Length: 362
Image (cartoon, rainbow, N blue to C red; front, side):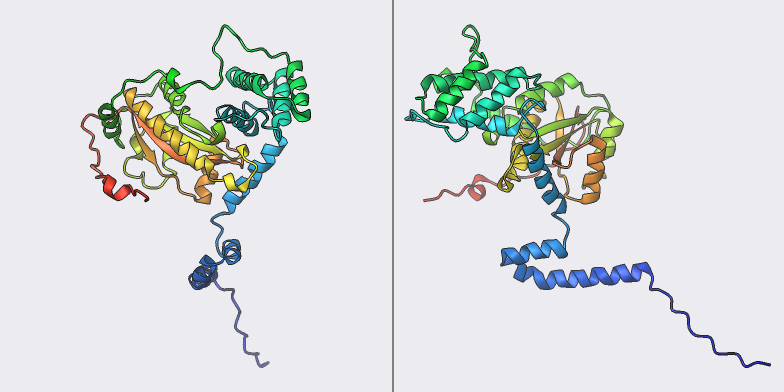
């Protein structure tokens, strides 16, 4: 009988969980070890977030996609153009300067007029009021500015558009502060509105009318925004089933998400900017508008709850797919909306006093 060779042990690959667990532990160790040095040097910080963390990948992509979209689209291709709105707003800010210079805006007036002419002479999707605002501001500019070679060329292009201000209507031009109609709301009533508007998490199960949302959004649009770009949109889910589904993507909603009848997703549009330095403006401007929106909803009999939005890739991907967002569009926050239950409880949430929040610099 032949002698059998001893069997060699079979080398089995390590289980996936062992490999991934080891990699995670190694990565966590490197993160702890390098976090301190990286926090003190910009280059090392960039290396840290290139090789040891992917948390900012989506933001990096959104910034670049926004720049690409900004450079690729013309005024009139879409319903608004951040660069055009910025230039018109720069003109109206220059018009209110004291004293006002006789020549100004030479660096961007030809571009602005060319953009306006393109919107006037083509089938533009720009809103009629935006077109009137731009035309009135340009008319006011050429009424007061002295000609230079550049300004004269721009004036000729603007005249060729045939735009004329409606003398019988309302001009969308700078006006004196004394012309502002006072609201008549005393501070005590305004403060009471702020106190009345609290985060409500328990709602009646009845639908929210789109007309009420439109009224609130119109009021929210008066919130201040960098160079009047309004780099955001409000995506409203008035279908309760979809509202619950999308609200569930955020953290901290597990206990009450099932009863949210309406959800608003505040979405920032990075295609309004060409500079990386402006990448945070969608969050600033979007939040300013969101606060005004919630106050407006309160006066319309609707309660609301702002919901923090986590910067988590998997959740952002699901939200982007649900809303059909472009790579340069990012959720800023969510707002649950509805008719608050009379017996629903509201957290007291004691606020910090002014003595802790206000610092008078001397």
